[in-house]
Every structure is written in structure tokens, then in C-alpha cells.
Length: 356
Image 1 (cartoon, helix red, strand yellow):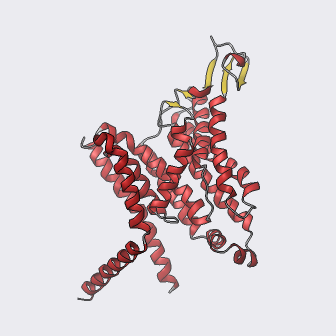
Image 2 (tube, rainbow, N blue to C red):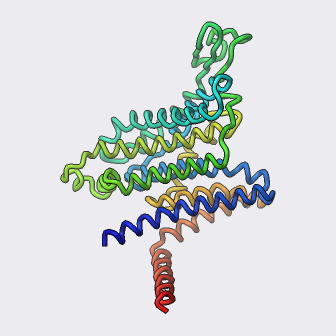
Image 3 (cartoon, rainbow, N blue to C red):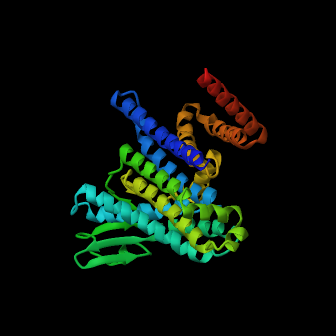
């Protein structure tokens, strides 16, 4: 019985990896044969990093059971910290090790912020995390928009007012962060292959955590906090573990983001409250606790507005209708019962065919 369950879990995980790899191969074939347009090619990396941050948020919302509205903020922290390193080291370090270290820095800094936020909030029982992470995302975005950072012969200069207040030699110095204009000239090292590898690693981290002893403790806390605590499970420790990993995964998505564009700005479009809500929509529509569903939902919902662009005025109306339809199909009791019956019929049919 146990072996059968383990086999089923492993098979289910491999299906998720297989879907990502098959889609990657199809996209690569379309790129090599010239079938895919340049516009669609430009969407591949964004699809991957939004799928990654959705996987990270699903760990927090679906596996841990805590609502976070600030994953765009963690993504922003990962993007800025890694871009700051890559921008300052692009003339002195080869691309591959610099990009690898940028990944480590982005992930580590995001994880640190997740840990620091989790210390006071995750000890509480309630929806406080949603409020705190919402505030964190907005604070981070506004702080990065206010920072002026430059370097010249006399050292590093910093200001939260304007460029002139830094007191640096603008003729010979170099502006690194220029307030709301962000970092201009970040190295564009991300590509579709790297993005897919990071996505697969993110899925592997979450899947392995879920099926580990720590993961079972995290899910026990989600299902019944009092029962878990009465069995000796350290509630704060496991909540901190899951939330920190979730923030780190969002930071990895931020690294891909910052290395996929030439100018990094902390705008509301990319790191604001609406983006955090959109990532949550990916998780909810894909299925809370369903990692594969988060990846698929992120890909479809990110592509959909672009595919509907030809419908101009009706584009967002159709997009909203599709969101409602998908939500009903996924979560309405009647639709779920109908889907379960059809799956049972298919399995029965396959079983009969094998017996023959």
C-alpha cells in the first residue's frame, strides 16, 4: 500500500517535469524552424519567471496555508540585489560566474527579507501575514524608487533625495541606481533555457519539501495547528522554513526578471500590489496546493491577453470572462464531480483494455 502511494506520487511529479520539458522542446523547435514570431519569443522568459514565483507562492498559500500578498516585493528585492551586483561587476567578471553569483545573491537577499518578516508575523495566528506582506511590497517598491546610488574615485555615494545630493563627481563617476529611473544597462543574460532550468529546480525544491518529513510537518500545521502543536511540532520553525523558501523562489524569479530587460525600474506594473494579486490569481486558478496547476495557469493567463490583443476593446472583457469560467470549472462542486466521474470512466476503460 505504501509502495503504491510512493509510486503514485513519483509518477505525478514526473508528469509535471515532463510537461515543462515537452513544452520547452516544442518551443525550441518552433524557434529553430522560424514558426514562432519574435513577439512570442519575447514572452517565453516572462512566462517562466511568473510560473516560478507562482510555484513559490503556492508553497506559502497552498502548502503552508498562509496568505501572502507581497511576493512581487520579494521578486523586486531579488531583481535589484542581483542587478546591482551584475551591473557593478559586468566589466570585471566573466558572464557565467557573475550570473551564477547574481542568482545566489538574489535568492539569499530575498530569503533574508522573508526570514526577517516571518520572525514577528509567523508567530501569530491569523491573517496578519497578508497585511504585513502587502505593506512590505509597497515599501520596497517606494524605497527602490527613492534610492540614488553612485560610485566615483572617492568611493560610493548614496542619497534618498536626488542625484545632486549624493555629492559625487558626475563627470567621472558612474550612476548605479538613478531613483525612479532604476538601473540602466543591466546585463541581459537570461534566456529561455536558463529560465526553464530555474523553473524545474523550483518545482523540484517544492516537491521534495512537500514529500519530506519537514513538508509533512508544514502540512500538518496547515491542516490543524492545535493538533500539530500538541504532537510536538515546532509551529514557528516550520512556518519560517516554508515561508523563507517561498520568498527565496520569488527572488530567483526576480533575478531572471532583472537579467531579461535592459532597464530595471521598481514600477507598480512589475512589482506593485496588482502584480502580487495577479500571482495569487495564478495560484488560485491553478489549484491551491497544486504545483503543476500553478505553472500551467501562469503560462495560460500570461499568454491570454497577448493572444487576445487583436480584439482590442474586448480583450480584457474576454480575459475576465475566461478567468470566471476557469474558476467555475476548477472549483464548482458540480464541475468537479463531473470531472471525477469522467476520469473514473477513462481509468475503467483503460483497465478493461489492458485486461483484454
